Length: 332
Image 1 (cartoon, rainbow, N blue to C red):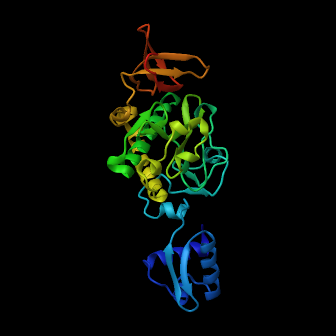
Image 2 (image 1 turned 30 degrees about the vertical axis):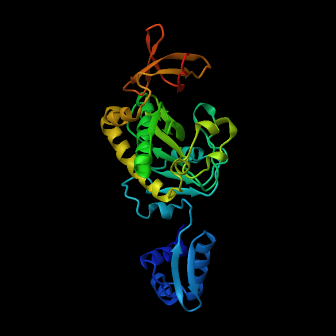
Image 3 (image 1 turned 60 degrees about the vertical axis):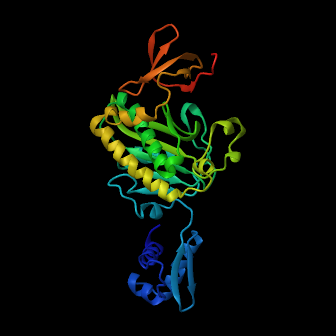
């Protein structure tokens, strides 16, 4: 949002809940009283609750539960991440938009956020359930100076930031774990997925697009049947809604810090935080590979390039680059 409505909104915020007269608003932003009224109506159409009586001025009493750029950036404390935000009420995929922006030269940290996705994408060609106005769907353009072999570790770093943000939001109510390579679990159930796509020149990364979806306020009963018993949301877990704007601000702040460390020191810089939440170490797991084959063994940990080290039942230790890993059922 730009222009007159943005300046009116800023003025009403600065009033701190007090009534601001139409004349003061008119003088402050240099428009007529009639234009002030039109800008106020435009804000109301976007969901802002603005009290006002003819000749009595205006007061901002409530902001909408929408992930508007101007709301996220109010109170956002980042240096480069989400300083430019592209907001969509509905979009097919935030990753698709961010990829287009990255290919057109958008800067490091350019962020896309939507209140709904109609074709949200997950790993391994899966869809990501994206109902309107309840969760966080966001994608970020990144331009790290790294080789393509290092790129997978940025998914792990992002998972650390998502897990940290969930822990901070829930406090002691959180039982948060990272499921290699891209899921964050809450009480053993999936609450977030991460998708990374990249553009490269030879062996150097030109850009990464980091897509993050977090189930915040969706009711578990709304999940599709095929994964209702495997997914949850923060609100379902703790029994009350989550402030989506506050969560987004906190996530972007945590993510900037973590990615700066990853850029400076590589995965080793965030390994301790990852390992503290990686609960599959030394446990029997099953890995479904991209070709449909299944591997069974014991998860030993994560290599410096983000690969999963797996000890097979034969005793051989292999590296798994991609796949869907789950804890093996007892007796298997």
